[in-house]
Length: 324
Image 1 (tube, one colour):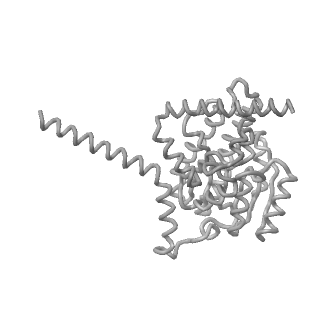
Image 2 (tube, helix red, strand yellow):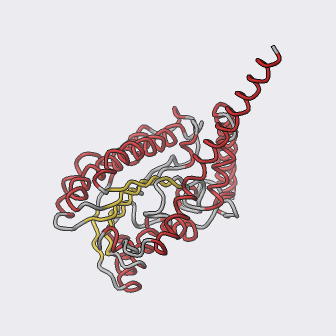
Image 3 (cartoon, one colour):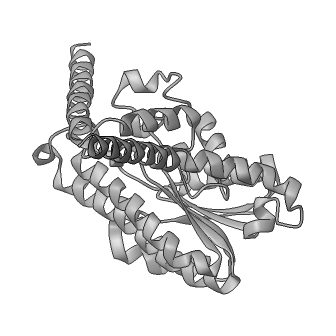
């Protein structure tokens, strides 16, 4: 009997050690991949070192005139890539293209397209991209509610926009460039997800569900394309100071945990080609790690309280602005 108890203790101990090791590996594989990529030039100097060498001269960025998308364009141009900017507003596209060309001496091209329109826009985009050897696609375009709210209160038009933009765009833009990337034998698709995908997020229900799609879609096609030397990176930011979060004055103030969009994107672009899955920023990585220590059911409850608080903050600010 004593021997059986001792054996059971050893089995439980080993199972615990294995579970802990797998958890640490799962959470720190991105960091380990980045360290390996940083050290790789010292041991394999013959491999391509720059993004241009590795993927080619052209990048495409959706949602390119604001926030993370705009900063991706600038960071990629800084590294010598020509950039195709896709967004809704022509005037803003022209302005950002002119700024990038003046500052970084690269080529740009803009395509005006409203991803909320769904299927009808993709023929136009494909025609505009004809003849451009796309090496990097950044699926950044996204839409959130105007402010956190229960799903029945969100306008139907907004819900359809989220479905068409957050799910449709990432799917159809990837579908568009994959054949060319396979033919070139190189390329990378970067899909911008969100920390809200880590669990169901009440008061952001459709948005968080669409971002869970972005992650699972990324991980699936990552395996499909690996044998063709085409990479897929899933980037999972938490709160960043961008217009998408302007419903919250607290978030927009920024902090150690809520970086500026410039700081966040500079860090995220650094991981490009080094890690297949990343939060993109060191403090987001730590937050993600500690959040995953909590059972999903409890994380969802925490998300519920956060959603209620952000919703209340927005409604109070609107009340104050109306009173003024």
